[in-house]
Amino acid sequence: MEDFEVGFELNKMRLANPSIGALVSFVGQVRDVNESDTVNTLTLEHYPDMTEKALAAIENEAKTRWDIIDSLIVHRIGTLKPQDQIVLVVVSGAHRSEAFKACEFIMDYLKTSAPFWKKEATNQGEHWVEAKLTDDAARARWKQ
Image (cartoon, rainbow, N blue to C red; front, side, top):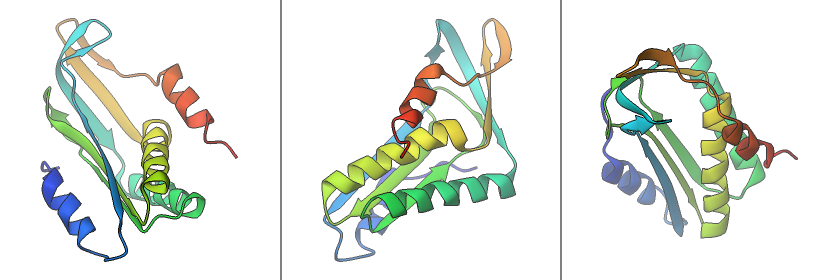
């Protein structure tokens, strides 16, 4: 997937509705080091239909929990290098508090529930990235 332009996406959402008083965003990018290994590339794979359904479900859940106006998830796939953007999450709302919570919720659920598989190529070889306990703990705090 092609890279995305953060400013363009933010401006498009900002101008979409005059009721928007807050716009919260998160951009994730490839790090050059993970657990003391130098990361040369990160390859993200997915099954499109499965992924689209999961992302829609995450956004819908955020919209039922918080009073937000809109949300956007852009997630790249393919082989990326350090400092390449991976993900953009944008949430708009009338007020910042609801938008911040919804944005954080969406990111926590993306890390644990979206069907993406990550493979790192390091100086030590290639390996699949396992889920982290800290990601599961972040998601658990949103249980109702």
